[in-house]
Image: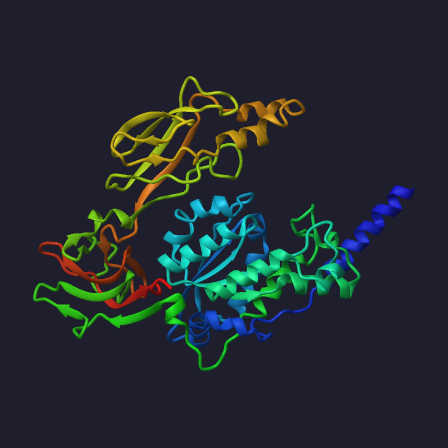
Length: 474
């Protein structure tokens, strides 16, 4: 009987918390640090049904960022700005603290090249800031940072009386790098105190929010309500660089040759073409063009290729932090296959590497750095995430759950990734309004991009170019 009463009280407490969240509105709270996202806010506010804006949004971090509040926030933004085409993704990796994300960001964050980045991660603050600085260096993204919500054992009254060091550190990173900062920790503490709740009232465990409460609404709302428009402001070129549009007509920076070739002079590290729909016919042979950057085929620039995040095997975490290359890559799929000599707990893993174009490309051991025969696959000695995952997810629990042994390392297990271009490969005609990345991650500076129709063909129709230029190093 006592247990039933306690259970009933527990459900009643959850129900009370679940009904508590107010109706948050995007931009209803003024935040002076929102000055650092005004290029994006201006685009959102000026979007119309006749001229809809496209905005790329990325959420990055670990398990807290992977939770459902990000969809709640995007729903809030879509309701506030119904004409905007939001292209958004969540590439958070649960359990990966800042040192790990400094490596996966090169496969996840930077190739995505968001207009607006929402970023939060635990771990050493210097690595946290390294991710922010690298984002500034290789993209023109505006950035939103925030302090953490409360975890089990944290007293909201004490948190309000004396701000925690982590919140201070994140605020300092935001100030140094001119990012928007939301003190979610303070707002979360005030909410708990006002309602007489402990931190655990909104948690499913020691730190993760419970989806049986309104925790996601609070988390999204506390951030979303501060995404405000500051009239008269339009971005900070010296901080987050510039995003400019250039009509695809003959002019100062655009030259059109007799054969239809276009030469675009630009300053930046990314160019996107927006189609006007001309020469697009899905029922016919695709209309294609070749691209040359500063006189060389775009495919010849090693920096404009990247490796995707390696696949999972034991858990949701990638088995390898990052794969790179020494030699000029080609577009292909890669497979790492475990071989005889592999220990069940990954101590070590013996493997071979094969590319769908390159073919067999060498064998390696997880105790050593690996460079494939062709140089198209490189794995640093400390890039393997084998030992920890097999120990934590398998070995630690296998005595009580023998079925987990099927996840132990064994010959034949495979890890995959891709090598992909950060440029149009090839540049193909699209329907009106579609966007094609022509080049990305070339050195941030002055370039000439030439778009040549294939022999005897026509040029894909282009309405305008969008040019992205990160801010010069500060």
